[in-house]
Image (cartoon, rainbow, N blue to C red; front, side):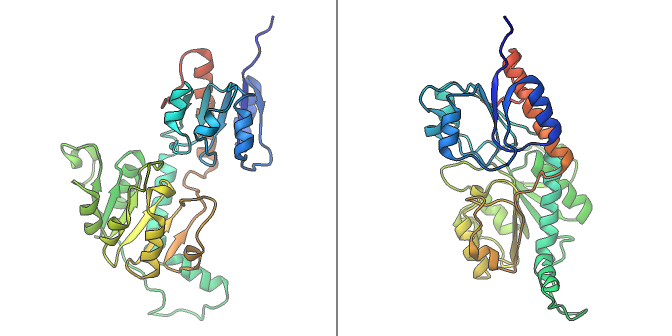
Length: 325
């Protein structure tokens, strides 16, 4: 008797090459419309599939993971983060979870650098003025931004993407680097390959840096970057986030921007995606992107292929390549 292929649900549309590979190997249900699945649909899927290929947009909490007559044994998350999954609940019901690190490091660091430059040079506000037909020609004093050469970049979370961002900023823009990391570095300059100074607290970093770039996972009980931290930033400071929206107290950030207590921000992620607060949309001192840190054709394909590698490893018994649970 021919062995049945595992049933796999893909929650969002993936690059064509990835979907073709999945279709060859599995009894797969794709999502050609790319519409996010509702909680009820995710809960129902738990009883009908052996595995899910999910993304950060899928909120897989305890009520979903512990659905009656659960069949799912594996979740291959497409993304380096997995804060969308209740890991404690997955552990209780013995669901394996994997992610797709490394392949998106350089692309996400590129977007972090883009946001550093766009926010400090006020390009979003200037482009809006031009597109709306309000530009009246060259001005010596209009839309003046801030130079970053010689300024201090503070990195919160010196993992793969934090390191890549700092490297670009140091060698490409001439910025000084300070960073906060839970992992102690014996000799940061030696280990990183460029001059960098580690500080022992987020408080110290916020008060020191001219530009703060966040590279930590979300999914905590509360934001790592609190209202108190934001209040310690320089009035001339900028806050960049390409990590997770819930890593930062978004309300406190909005208040600081509206009140002019910091100079600006560059955001690729938000606390309640796809909802973006109206207050942020109205501000001209913030650059906003729609969660596109890894959005290149090459990277998104590589992420999808790595998710399939993880599925293959789980079902052939060798284990997922990037197992996080």
